[in-house]
Length: 288
Ligand code: DGL
View 1 (cartoon, protein in one colour):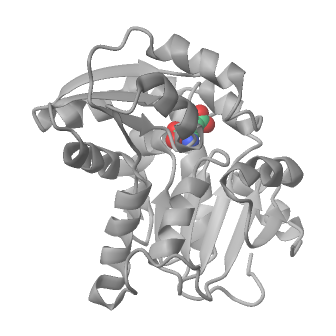
View 2 (cartoon, protein in one colour):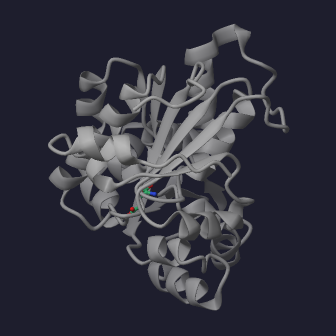
């Protein structure tokens, strides 16, 4: 598939749904001059309760699709896919690939004072031990908890609801004393208000978006990058591919200020190597 007008210096970003938009926002603030292609695989969300090999398959298909659009780099804005698919993706892709777990750990090492860090994520992310291994390698004490229902709450647009608070209290009930909590799923920053209320102000909530953006912009643009922290988005273009219902995606994304850019519905078969040719060419360009 080729987009018209063609992309310029684009970076591909993907997640199972709206969660990765939190990372996309940070990337755009750091690199306002670049184009971005975001893929929200909402037809197959949640990834976190699927077998790892299935998520690896999804991630490979998405990476091939985005690389086929000519992106210069790929950001896996999904902890689940980063936990289970990253080393393989980095080997397969012709462009640099970044995940969100190492940046999340880096952010936690900067945030903790006492060295006891909590991490919450999907079943697959927590089950993979990806965070726990890295945190322990930094000498940090770790408490980890899977919170499978939270992705649904966010995707349903209920991030700031009493239902969300009940679930968060339930999952965090057994936590030891921690001074930093890693939001190890890119959907969770959308629950920041509820999470902070439950853990209290003494606990720093850590998400990987800013450190990921810092790492990617340093690698892609080096010293030439524009001043960090630029608030306004620059002239770069953003195209969102959505495999599920684009209206539902736009509705949920309103929590973080909405979807800014073009929206292209994409049949999920376009991400499957066996059916890609025909399906991709039928994706409709629907400028908003
Ligand atoms: N937002 C993703 C993550 O960071 C995936 C959540 C899901 O689809 O289960 O893990």
